[in-house]
Image (cartoon, rainbow, N blue to C red):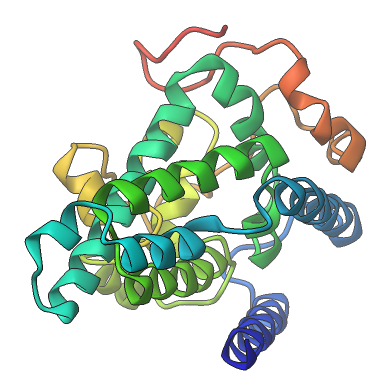
Amino acid sequence: MRRTVLIARLLIVFKLLVCAVERTWPRHPFRTRILNRWVGNAGMLAADFALVGLILAPGGPIGMAAYCSQNEIGLLHQVRAPLPLEVVAGFLVIDLAMWLQHWIQHQVGFLWRSHRVHHTDLDLDFSTALRFHPFEAIFAILFRILTVAAFGVPLLGALLFEVVLDVSSTVVHSNLPIPVRVDALVRRLLVTPEMHRLHHGVGPTMERNYGSILSVWDRLFHRYQDPDPGGPSVELGLPEHRDAAALNVFALLLFPFRPNPRRQGEAGSAPAR
């Protein structure tokens, strides 16, 4: 319990540091008012905690990993590989599952209704990593729970993934002043802010760069696109939602119940449902 509290506090401190740096030395100019965005994103986080905590309070991926370890449930427990190998395999399996989950959310209309809340942010910073509709948060956690159960991801692997995911999500949505060459080098293996910024862009790039932690899945499934450091600045958000003041907490919570406009992705993308 003490270790869990310590990890949570360290993650909060990390987010505050990222916030301070990106606000002092932003890589890209911010275009909207901070207060409107932060209130909206914090409101979504509060709604996630309220609803997700109520439904999934006893477990989550880490709780499922502990249960599977105690009862030897899942593929990895049948193979009986060395623990370090199981941890690495479990980490990779969950990251791949998250890539698949993210891709599915862009293809299936009723899932896109919730996921588009995340794409309505007109700027990117550390708080964008908090901007998920509760319906999406539940779907994502259930997807990870099922992945952990099916593969028997060890407790250490599940815990490591959740911590790394939190750090990665904060960084890739940030506006940190990472040098172009460093970003290009890092994204050979990991998702970077410039790489993920394309995914939040208006237009076809929204159907690229789905990765959460590792960039290898986008390359493997031919969904990777390099950012162009010398090109025009990426316009963020969705074309049908350009009024930041209208994107308040209550409006965002109602997004799943509103009609789906056709997504502004590549030709052949899924029709609105």
